[in-house]
Image 1: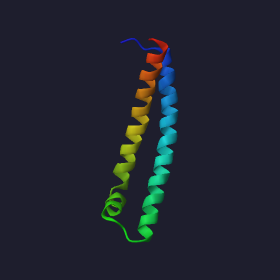
Image 2 (image 1 turned 60 degrees about the vertical axis):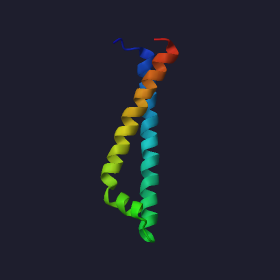
Image 3 (image 1 turned 135 degrees about the vertical axis):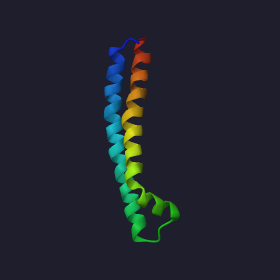
Image 4 (image 1 turned 180 degrees about the horizontal axis):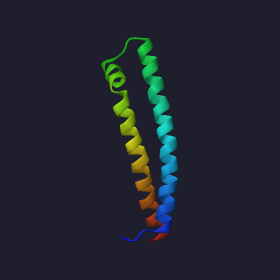
Length: 81
């Protein structure tokens, strides 16, 4: 498999976008669980509070690997490589 420069540039841009998305999603997730901990917690909010570390790691893997992969494919496709 040949590695295209346009694909690598797309992957780099995707990595940056994935990092930004991860930080935004993590802040929203933590804010949502903090607000739900102050009042009556729904069963989902209680589950999310108990399993926050695996959920955060799953977000990290999904966003930091998935978006760069999509960026690589998009860059290679648009450049014709």
